[in-house]
Amino acid sequence: MSRSITLGQYLPGNSYVHRLNPRLKILALLLLLVLLFSLNSFAGLFSLLAMALLLLFSARIPFRYFLKGLRPILYIVIFALIIYLFFTKGGVVLLRIGSFTIESEGVREGFFVITRLITLIIFSLLVTLTTTPLSLTHGMSFFMKPLSKIGLPTDEVAMIMAIALRFIPTLMEESQRLMRAQVSRGADFETGSIFRRAQNLVPLIVPLFVSAFRRADDLALAMEARGYRLGAKRTRLHVDKVLPADLGTLIFVIILIAAAFYFKL
Amino acid sequence: MVKKPEIIIEAKALEFNYPGDSLNRSSAINGIDMTVNRGEYLAIIGPNGSGKTTLLKLFNALLAPSGGEVLVEGISTVDHEKVPLIRRSCGMIFQNPDNQLVATTVEEDIAFGLENLALPSAEIRQRVTEVAQRLHLDKLLLHPPHLLSGGEKQRVAIAGILAMQPRCILMDEPTAMLDPSGRREVLDTVKALNREEGIAIIHVTHFPEEAAHADRVLVLNQGEVVEDGPAEIILTDLEMLHSYNLQGTAVVELAALLRQDGFNLPTRILHNRELVNSLCQYERKS
Image (tube, rainbow over all chains, first blue to last red; front, side, top):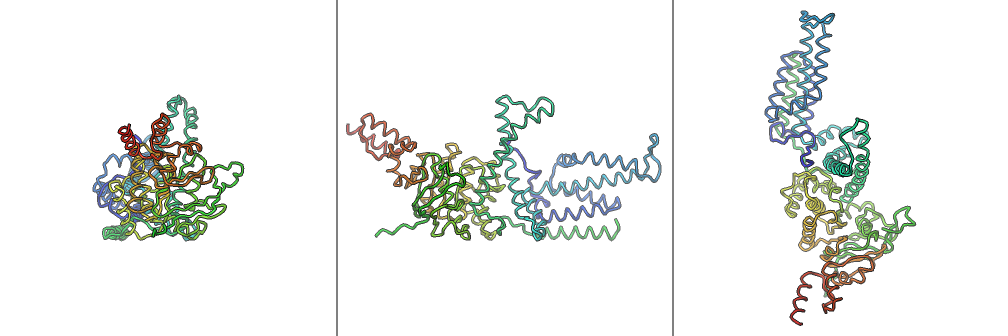
């Protein structure tokens, strides 16, 4: 059970998107999101959506992952659709319910917005599903680097995130062990009102916290013993090499943006 | 002429008290003078609270002495600038295998110490590959630590130290939380490193069986070195061991029982083979 805990949503693979430099993926994602929100025509939007679907397909990401990724924003999509349908006026009246009307402009706007949201989700999924959490962390810390100029400890933040990733499975195992230990002594985590259940979790959370602090103490000692020093210069085993494919992708994205602006898509 | 052995660690009138702990003197160090030679396998045994772990932490500059000093390859552990040098030549393995692995994959963890030394990536890669082959971890390089067995985790920890090319490895009860097969895995690894690479080992342990692998054994009690000598002399002195609430190995205890029953066995029996040999000879004599 605990052996199958997956971190983040990374799906191993060796596709074109998988192999891209994580920093570039983040940069390209940001650029594409800007482009996505500056597009005003269905033609531009649908070509971007087609591109996203093509990449999703080429990365061999099963369709159910796409649906799973869509679920958290499903309500936002529905809500946005309703708002646009009823409150954007213009064009012909398609439907009249009491004093509410649905007009053609509302339908157009509504579908435009949800297509935009879905495309956004696909692009973000493409990054999170094809990049290991660790590379993602290091990629993000690269973009946070300028913040170290104003005194933010960006390397340390990246280290904290990496350690958190390392210890999530360990702490999950531990919480399951604690839970079984408590259940075997008659604890009940499943029945009763929500307050009752929350209350029953206290004997689980307290020992989990105590042990997490002890682990943190041990780990700090072990890190120090292996020569880790706050603020000292470090190198990395993995270097994110910038390959021709990375540069090509970046240039392609820039051309896309330029074209979209030029043709006023 | 015998060449004088090269000293790696030297403690001089070493004292340490945990701050604010004036009443409870346990785990403190009360004046220790000792040396560890190059390539030596030293076991440290002693009852709970005798200061074994504290001593190791003092050797690794994780604690600063309150009196006297520790010299690691001639460098004092209070010399702040040189602490990285000390940690590089004397790595430390801790008891809990889960709490000393830092990275999300085995290879990143082996690389951690090297990354702290700010070595170039290519050299880190090369050393990680070499060390992983040496400790038979090459198939596990991309595994996350939580999928490893206890013995494998400790071997990864040892690999992380080994990659720094140390002169000495300090081990604080490295097998206490492992199952028997993991324990053997770790012990075999450590013994091979000592014999083949000449890396000195300082092994703090609760198990007399493990101490029996060492060349030299040191008994610690209430922060003082009370016995120091070759394993076959220290570990066969049951009377002394029992007086410090320590056990002998199964073989030593058994030999003592047999002697009590009137069997006239030699006094220095430590290893299984020695007991078997003397029992076989005994049979022939009588």
